Image: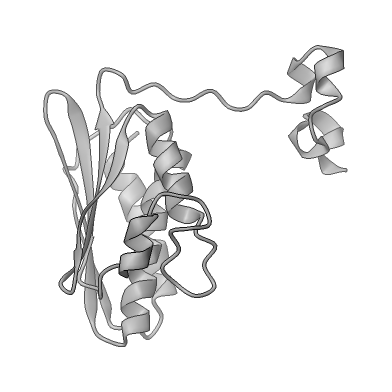
Length: 180
């Protein structure tokens, strides 16, 4: 998956979403960097981090910057998302990757970072908070090169024996039944 394409798509969307907020975006992604990851899942992780940063900066009422960069070494690809926002509140840092616990904004569900963390872990990697203070926040995504395996999707009822398929909720069934 060409990382620069994923990052550009996220930044384009968030630049539009920023509206009147004084937020600048920068990207420093090597043009030829290709990571072994599910493109849609990686987009979702990066979007969550950039959206959180945008919302925090906009809520602060101050100008800010969101930067994305990436490097690779022999063992892994590293993707960094930094911002110059107000930093995460202490309560949010305590339970950062726990569902319904780590939300930093009013109206947020506290699911975004928990889901992003699970997606990265499903790729054999890790998502970590490197810094969060009055100067801003930095997250790092580490995707290992050797063990980068995609987590299998959940089974659809059509793929299971009949007795197990009855236990799968309708939304997880393939074919026309999924629309019910």
